[in-house]
Length: 62
Image (cartoon, rainbow, N blue to C red; front, side, top):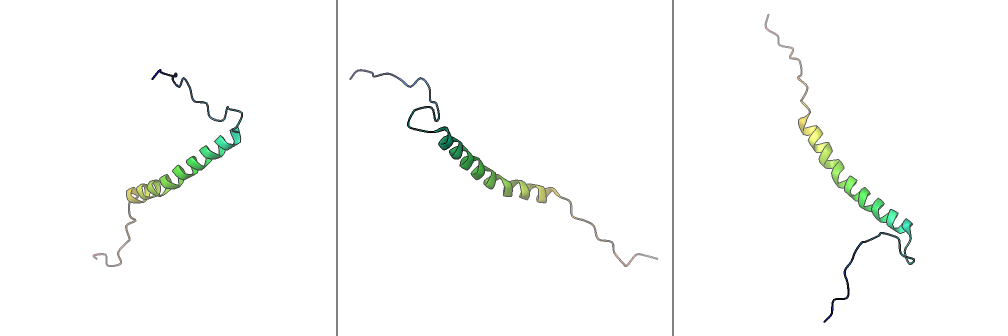
């Protein structure tokens, strides 16, 4: 079997049958998914590192 060629480049949304809007929506969905997965992790890390406030005690020695 003879080699037919190789892929030289991939261009998103550049062929006549697709639109660049479809590519924009795809990357928007991927970005929103990544942000939704990353936000709770960052929040948990910030909450874990935050020091707890020290409450003053009423029973001070005289």
